[in-house]
Each structure stands twice: as structure tokens, then as C-alpha cells.
Amino acid sequence: MKRFRTALSVTALALAVGLAGCSAAGTASTGTSITGTTTSGTAASSGTAEAVSLDTLAADTHYDADDLTWDAASEVAVTLANGASTVASGTSSDAVKVDGGTVTISADGTYRLTGSLSDGQVVVAAGEEAVVRIILDGADITSSTGSPFVVQSANEAIVVLEDGTSNTLSDAATYADQGEDAPDAALYSMADLTIAGTGSLTVDGKYNDGISSKDGLVLAAGTVKVDAADDGIVGKDYAVLLDGDYQVTAGDDGFKSENEEDEGRGWVLINGGTLNVSAGDDGIKAFNTLTIAAGTATVEESEEGLEAQHIMISGGTATVTSNDDGVNASGGSSGSTDSQGGMGGGEMAAGDYTVEITGGSLTINSQGDGLDSNGNATITGGTVVVNGPTNDGNGALDVNGELVVNGGTVAAAGSSGMAVTPGTSSSQSGVQLTFGSALPAGTTFQLADSSGAVVATFVTAKQAASLVFSSAAITAGEEYTVYTGGTAQVTAGLGDGTLDGAQEQGTVTAGEYTAARGPGGR
Image 1: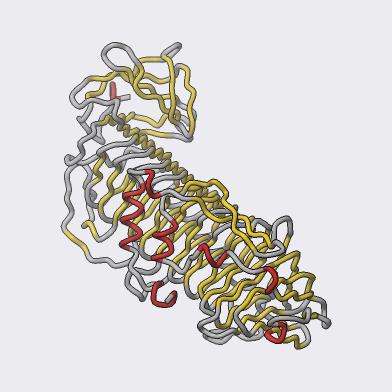
Image 2: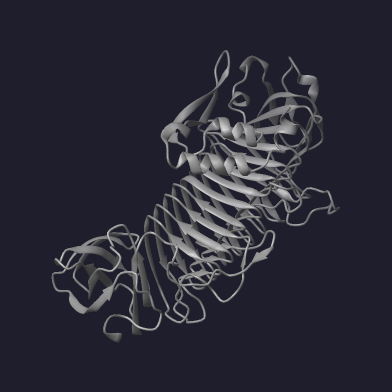
């Protein structure tokens, strides 16, 4: 049944994300602690609230919390040792074969691995219907010829990190087998893969990828550090983070799903936990839809931070630093429609690409475009802060179709040459400030209404010549006085302030956007 279930469309998941942003009914806790007792293994709650329910995940992925519960009495104990690995006698022990440095598991069941192999490999070849649970209990596996951990065949492989233990997987810099279907990651699976447990795992992918599933991937828990020559963590059909702490350093993409062939696949969901990425190319990437619904996602270094055909943020905290675009809705199918033009229109035609922000917090520091959609973008909630480019060839906001702002708070600072503002379909008003010369990093901007009350305080993270600001505190048609300086208490650039010591710069009228002038022309 699981094999058919994984073919469901991501549409239901996207709908659940949207609904969960409006109601607490879609919350549940993830299983993050898996321990073996005298009678059974149990999955304990971490108390982390999710924006997408586990029932929805069970319908759209292979994930099943029941798989994180097992009878400890049925565990097969495997002690790893160079040239002398042993298997405890008992139930299913005949399903483990030792051949030199290779340990092969050939049947459904739960296997507890301890010890180390300085030059060896663990192989799961259990058949297409098997659910194989591998408990890493202080296991250290290194291979000098290829991948140290390979799932050749199973319905689902579950890697459990035993509480309080440290485990390592390290592959070779060059693989002896480089055929088309050969493993190419330190932790490689041809089957659906789940990582769980509260222990730690260090993955050193010297050849290519760190962790790679050629089916679906769910990160349910664990403290995991991945260092990879190419991609860090990859799930083909989908890549889901439910909980745990994942630190990824990658020469190419950091965390991604790459299925470009099957409709409704190739999506990424961050639904809890912590993900920290430093990538040589894209930080977090999906071919289809990238959703951040809960948890914390930080892209410390990248060419493009978040990239997918459709990008949805309904909760959680996302922080992106990029050498090029911070958030980029592009790729995927490229069917285009006519540009909607107007205040939010770019010069290129709008394609089938979207950015949709309904909640959460998004902070971008980009050298290229900050928030970029090759189609449309909609903001109805949450907080969006962009410290965009300093060069006029890019903009803090870049939307080929229309940027619709119907809620939330938006502060987008950057160069003035390609400034984009909310489109005419927006129900929430805002202001645009454009200065004749760029103001330095650390400049405090403040807006005061006609009574002198401060309604907005923003502190730039770097040089800026333009600022677009929209929030529920701004009323269309009202005039606001712009100040620089004063006092400010901010988080990610936004917060509260006073006009003590501030300098008046001019006035702006809410809803009157123009990229050509600002208060006083300064």
C-alpha cells in the first residue's frame, strides 16, 4: 500500500498547508525520541507544533508513525568490527550475512548496529515489500571504495539514531563502481528513507552527495551534520523535515527534491525542526513546490537561497543569504501568460511561477534580486524583510506578473533602479521611499502619521537607496512623515522606535508608488 500511496499529488499537501495557517486544527507533535525498552521501542513527542498534520503527511508520503514503534525483543544485534563483524544468534539472525568488511541485511526487521568498520559497508537488500529498521547505536562506518551505507531494495528503510550516541558515515573520494545506477552518496537509498531518533549522525560525502534517497525522504528527528562534495541532502520524490537539527555544508545544492519527471513530485516541505545550510549553489530547492510551514530554515551561504516553481511560506522562520536571488520562483514548467503589468509588473511575461506568503517570518539578504517571481507573488500575512541588492541591475522585489499585498508586513530595501512595488490589486496600502543617493547600512527609517505617532521602524542591514514598506498600520491616501535616525529596537530590521534625535526627510502619501522620486528627492 505504501508504494501506491507515495504517488499522490502534492496538491492535497499544499491545501493542508494553507488551511493550517488559519486554524490550530492541523497541529500535532512529531515523534523524535526512539528508544528500545524491554518490551518495545517507542516514539516520544518533542512538543513541536506542526503546521501540516501527520495524517496529511501519512497520506502524501511514506511516513507512518507506527513504523517508529517496534518490539525490542525482535531486534537483531550486529557488532561491527574490521574483518570480524558478528551477529547475535536468535530471531532473524540468518538475515544478516558477513563477508569480509561487508554486512548484508536481506529481510524485513529491526537491526541494531554497534562498533566500527574502518573500511567496510552495510547493505540492505531485503526486497521491495520489506520495512527495514536500522538502529545506529554508536556505529562508525567508513569505505575506501564507495558508499558505506547502501539500501539496494526495500519498501522503506528507517535509520534510527539511538539516544545519546554518536554515529558516523564516511565514503570514498572516488568510487570503484561509477555505473549509471551505482550509489553516489555516503548514505544512499533506492527505497523510501526515514531518519529518526535523538542521537547524532555525522555524514562525510567526499565523492558526491551526503544523504540521497532515490524515492521519498523524511527527516523525522536526529542531530545530523552533513558535509558533501556535491549535494547535501536529496530526496527524489520529496524531501520533508519534521523535526531534529540538520546542519548541511554542500559544494552544490544544500537540501532538495529533484524529481522532474513525475507529476506532483519533486517537492520540499519544512514542517518543524532546524535546518542550517551553506551551499555552493542553491540552498533549499524543489523542482515543483517548496513549502515552509513550521520550524527554522537558515541559508547562511548560497547562490540562490530558496528556489522552486512554487514557493509557499505559511509559518516558521526562514533566513536567507545569497550571492544571487534570495527567493526565486522559477524553473519547473515554463508555460507563460501575459504580464499583468501595473505597479507590480516586470518587463517580462509572467509564467506559471508563484510566491505565496501567508504567515511566518522571511528575512532575505541578497546581492541579486531579493524576492523574485517569474510569475506572480502574493503576501497575505507574516513578515517579509528584504535587504536586497546595492546595484541597479537587480531589485529587492522583482515580480514579472503582479505583486499583491493583502496583509502582513513587508519591508524591502535595496537599489532604486529596478524597484517593484505592490500592484493595483493589493488591498493593503504602503509607501515607497527613494533617495537620490544610497544611505549606509545601519540607517534607521521611521514613519510617523499625522499625529506624530511612529507607525513603522526599519533599520537597514546594508546600503540602500529605496525602501518599500507595507503593513496594516498604513492607510491609503494618508500622508506620512519620513525620518532617519532616532532610537530603534528591532528584530531582523523591524521593530519599535522613537523620534528622539531623528531627522525629518520629507513626506510621502500612502499608495502613491513611484521608483523615480522619494521624500524631498534625497
